[in-house]
Length: 498
Image (cartoon, rainbow, N blue to C red; front, side, top):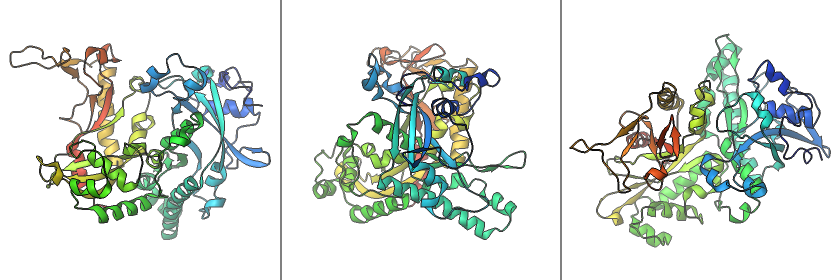
């Protein structure tokens, strides 16, 4: 009754506890939407205790409030739509913070009795629509509508993955606390451990990073459900028909270690086999000359009944991007990799920190599973062989150096009004045109010649009509982050096959 009564209303309309009055003195208030739901809708005081928030029919339940919105790429699809037809396109804006990682005075050892599971086993999630594509001050949350709510419990498969993630954290902490008896030694050794464990965690992440602050105290992390996993929950709530069409692996995995073991078994079985042999043995219907033939082979190996690797829910929940890689016998000539659409509204926000940005979250949350094929004869694809699987995540050094460099340099172009359009010219000094009749060119964003992470436009055509992105008054194709092919090739050379 409480939640049905506020559906469709704006947060400011239901703010009986006057949370938004606080924004008059401070417009940077974290969690104000949750404060409104907790104190104005449910009528209880905010606290920092690790116990669950409320009882529902005698069952302890954690209340979470989280933002949802339509991805910019789907905006054309929702024009004229309202209600359920509109809500189908809503996705998670961010992950859901659960509780702080327990350090002192003891380390929890049992998952079932842990604070993390106590607070995540049963979640009452209230969704509000974050109706902006840039960071807004806390006062503007008053205009965001409450969309819906759901009572979430996890499947046995999801619980197993959460348990494995939690135990990875527990085991690491136990090792440090056993090996180093004093408070100072332990905390010094724990600096950066959140980044060290990140590549091994499927559904949770530890944020913020564990580090020593200038005051001498330590910044401690919280357990947070990954944005990719929360997005899966959100979309499943609004699309009730998803279960009938969802693609899951016949044999799932509860940890990256299990996934790695399965990939190893497939490598042992199929390594060295040519496209021609794989087509016959796996029963692949696609023609060998088809660009996606390698990916179709991998789908058959996994027993997945879909057309693309990234349709598999086991991968999307965990932020795993499956990408087939074709190399030469020397390990070279890997193509540039298209990654992520760029949200320029966030780029325009001068106050946002890199670690709070969408691009930082993307590179932190995602990892790559790469089935590798070797092109032994560029003129005869029948001789291309399967070599095995490699998996990697972006380490903190790469994110803090390469990704941040691209982020800062591109933002400076926008903020300093130095962004410009650069035309391509022929040998006679005339502007070149493409097949669509449009002049060839691009904005002077970071390019692959100088950056490992760079910008490139992406659209079905390169006509002027396709230039739907406008930045500083300059029309351009929608822009994406790309990963330089030489970086991928060099990275893969340093990684052993699973």
